[in-house]
Length: 317
Image (cartoon, rainbow, N blue to C red):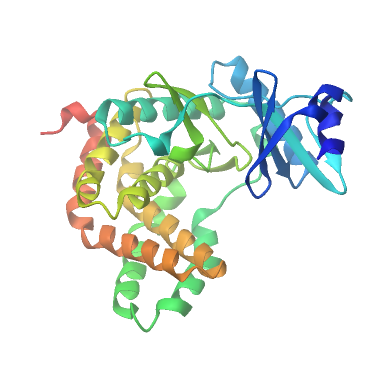
């Protein structure tokens, strides 16, 4: 670790290091705190650095990588690459009640502003595309079918038919741009009740705009699914989130129609990922959430579509 840290200066070699998760460490040096992360690709680090620098210059609450003594935004050691950036002090979103309407609307409007900045970033073409529908078709769907075909055959068949008839054509018309692609509560930092930081831009890709909204919606549902009160309040959360977003940048009617279907695709990806990891408990949880949403589709869909059309939660009865 010392060989890595001293690339940012000899003083960093004496930092107090705490491992957080695999490939992530927290550093304390004097009164300052930093996050060190392992990265797989130096090209992607440059792209992320340039994007973060641009976002910071355009008033987005991000933390920029520090450059090493050689003037590059990564350290290399034994074939691995590492980035270091100042720790954003605050409370992670997963430790707050994001079902609180003012907080939810604040997150929605912040995401809309982030999307607005990402949409006009001049080097967008340097980032790969992310084809959600294609990834589910080629990877997640076969994986989930192989695991669940006997137990959930009828439900999966109905879901497949709904997606194929209701999403295939609208999907191609959905607005695309640079998206965060990992916009979940743990990547949001709050200070004094205000969103003060957005973390982890290493998964940024060109994809459908509503992916980030749907991804956050599924993440919040997963975190609170075992609590009946939070589960019952989830639809209001989605409406407030869309309302907050729409107060800055209204969504299109097609995005309102596709919203639940994109969530289905995300849940299928989650399920397939957990199956590949051998975690059938989490796979079953995500399958349960998928079917819970699907069973209430006819109730949820018109309310979500109306929220999108109204552009704000206040337009709902």
